[in-house]
Image 1 (cartoon, rainbow, N blue to C red):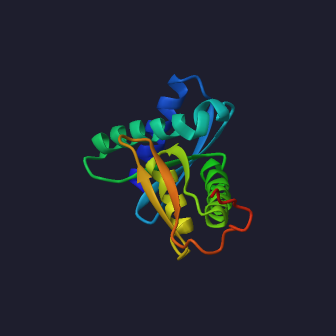
Image 2: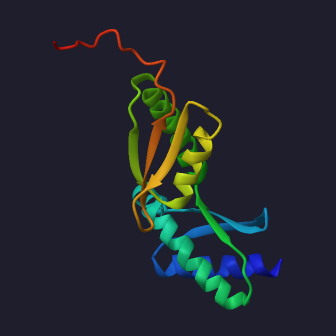
Amino acid sequence: MEEIEIAKQVTIGLLERMGAKTEVEGFLKEGNICLDIKGDREGFLIGKHGRTLESLQTLINRMVSKRLKSTFRVVLDIDNYRKRRGDSLVQMALRLGDKARMTGHSQTLGPFNAYDRRIIHLTLKEDPSLNTESIGEGELKRIRIIPTKKEGYKTENRFRLK
């Protein structure tokens, strides 16, 4: 498909200018152009918490949209980083959801980009004893996990002053 080839060319050209030698595979998934990147500087291209990867994806999306004159979303992944990151976020959300439920106190975490926040919100969505909300402004926001039920956490060790 022509759109995939254009996205691959744009991506390879940009990464070569950054000094990275890479191989790029492309395919369509759910209406998005997905590009899997393998190369010699994967850590550099992913960046801390995937921020460089997010920036590259934004830049490549704009470059590809300009060349295609149509809207295709390009999703970049480097060495299955998105899957590993998603699994890590799910585990963290479940762990902190348990902590919020057991203590009865809200847990605040982040900041996260929109993609990461969505994973956390969806992970805890089906739990009736928890609510989640994004707080803050801008691209990076924090997430608050809020217990909805007060029962279930321990109160027998609390002291009352008279």
